[in-house]
Length: 202
Image (cartoon, rainbow, N blue to C red; front, side, top):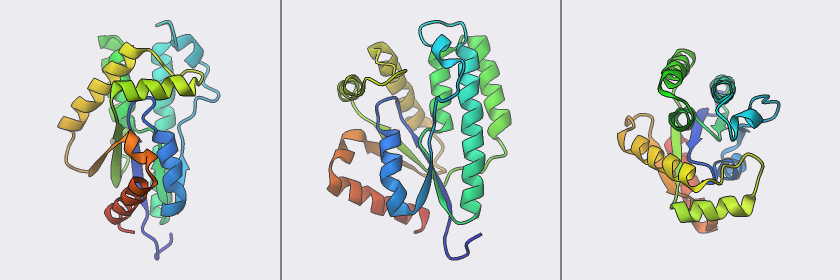
């Protein structure tokens, strides 16, 4: 444990195309942070989960287990005095399940999420990235990455669910709301980095 540095856990949430991974990487050097990225590598369910409902539940659980493993690592790093950044965080997984799972499967998934995460420390800060549907769809079409869901109704539903979450989220931990397009300006980026450093006590 480094007594001279204050560790922190930062969780970033937002729908696909909001820039979670890009912003996490942009924060890495200024905060002296370690980024714990979400990855679909070695996920045997993801191909079957896209376009069918056959293995959707397994796919959701696979990502949940990965999130829990990253969260546990983030907690260890924070205890050692390191800032740990998770570029996708639990609320986004739960919101996604409201679209992909039927009611019975969703209840089971929510119970499993609660069981696996209730003992984990809350993040020091949650960053919520969002923007208009038009802006996000433009980004997705330019990215054209495998498994990026470029289906407009899906993204629209996820945007609505994220907005609902933001309006009803508990006041702790603090939530920093940022429009994705703002981060295309270096001046705005630098301003948010300073704000984040103040919030986490750097």
